[in-house]
Image (cartoon, rainbow, N blue to C red; front, side, top):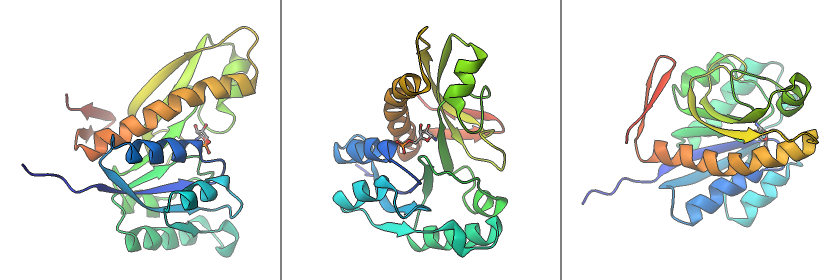
Length: 206
Ligand code: GRF
């Protein structure tokens, strides 16, 4: 029997890191054949860093202000990720847009999670956008990253109903429960070699 070596991941974060935690938990439980070779944060105070350290995962702080523009920041980021032999880049609440430097360095190998059903409500405050618009359902989307804002090909989505008394906080919490299920599932599909991309379409092998 040929066993595949674990897929090498980088998880990029800026804040709480509950999605990072869900990914770590799934790897530790043996349900994803992957290894996180580094967690990179642009925020030195991100709680996600504490989560990584607690689980013995290497952390790198890569701050915005040390670079004069996005391309310089991304060039240094590519180097960090290559140094850690990263094969798949996971954006888990990483509050920066990526330039073509990053996107071209990891073709079809950067994945983001967005707290809405794309293409509805891209960008910041997606949960508030959904509530303000008055939709009955929102959710989360795991997608590949291109140079646009939340515009890359869609891998997985989960639907969440909106309740009549929802606030941004209650809706966010309900969406996050689905995020913590969908994101590890999408990574598992990559690790098992089940993802193929054809233009805007992501094919998932059975
Ligand atoms: C998530 O809601 C995700 O959809 C968005 O950023 C948030 C990150 O949350 N991209 P956490 O840091 O993983 O808790």
